[in-house]
Length: 275
Image 1: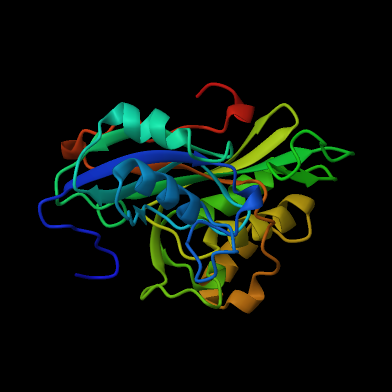
Image 2 (image 1 turned 30 degrees about the vertical axis):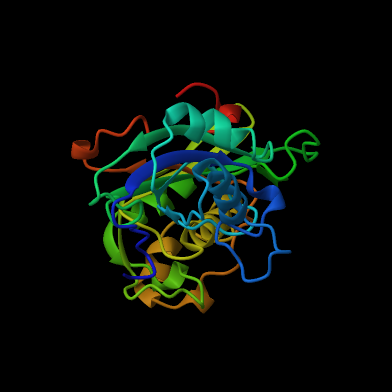
């Protein structure tokens, strides 16, 4: 059994979609110290109470401290399938208000929240404003200057396809390969909101925040759009500048093959309105 597998012989494998506000958490992944709050720790505690046995979860993509999710997908094993009502309403009654199970489904033994996923989609929300919002603090990143969205989209187009993203990976990233395939990347606007919508087969640690930091430099006019292509060619993280803050980042979609027949796995942050 590998560290990524949670199979219990004779048990039931279940998948959940989870929404959470990451502001008060030290990321998704459970830490050795129980005093460090993480989404995984509070979710596993609630699931274990409903399952009446210890539960260990595996997620589609680990999110960093302060990062949010509208549709994180996880799987776990339980000796007894308690039913959707127990895995949703029952678990939610034991969770803090900042974490919610959206749906629960039984899945076959070969389903794996991380390795079965064929794509992930993030949005990074920015508020173009003179005064940071009091109501949305921690939920989006304030930008106190006008952004050149056309230039940012020219830069974002350089990200498409399968490429080496070494310039946009964290120094401590443990992925074996820096190569990722970006399916789409676009800067969009809704009123005072401006956001990056990026969809790829997978992401490196801090990849989206590092990309966003570079695109903001383009948007401010500090760098030309072609700088994004130059960074990719350099394959050097030190050339790409400062990562954007975690506040505006949301994991909002995880793709799986249709054979698993999962419910909708794409949910925009409510602040953006209907999809």
